[in-house]
Length: 292
Ligand SMILES: [Zn+2]
Image (tube, rainbow, N blue to C red):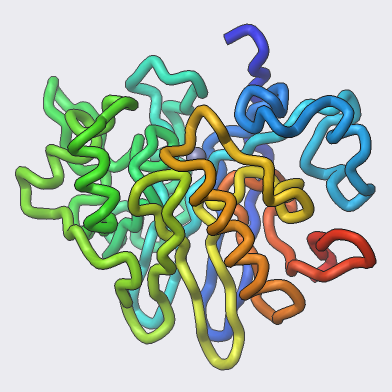
């Protein structure tokens, strides 16, 4: 696609956060520079031009949106959990993946890909399940051979009914056939620190991931928000990608109500560097405080 510019990862893209006793590491596949209206039609040129200064890291000076695609690697107790597996390089998707990403991920995880206990798919869009598997000698094999893969029941059912992105055959069915996929409730608890937060709208059974440890909190957004600009403008939806934009907007309002002016660190699944911050109420609209 001519309007998409891809940035190569650099050392500064390696980010880590501590949430109580839980460590969260960002592993970047790609950052693409795109017209905001390509994904978020409500983000008009005029609206982008009117955004406050705190949104600057998430746009180019020319007003193009920086869309990051990254996995979060979560170390909780003895568990290693990968939240979302990005795009991969095996399909002709509208966003390009990076063939080297699995190697970067393996290097970033102590013990490598074999050490991953759980893979959480916040939802089953191509840029979240792409590296669930790899094509080896013509066969789709799990990238994380010892992991349980978790998706919400509603998400699996919704995707089986309408697999518009073609993710079942390469990225999901091979896991089902090997008995490695667990379809769980949307509020499933993984361990004492990690649980899923129902947040349907962008997709039928979308979930966020809540981290709670030693009195500290963090939320991995998935695609409930694609850009921090939506924190200030929750009415802006990913119209073409959403299953139900009205429900997606209601979900954003609900999450803002719950997390604004709390200590919860918000980790944006598509938020470009610095990726994490806290939602603060302002005089007019909320803002994203990335000064941690
Ligand atoms: Zn996405």
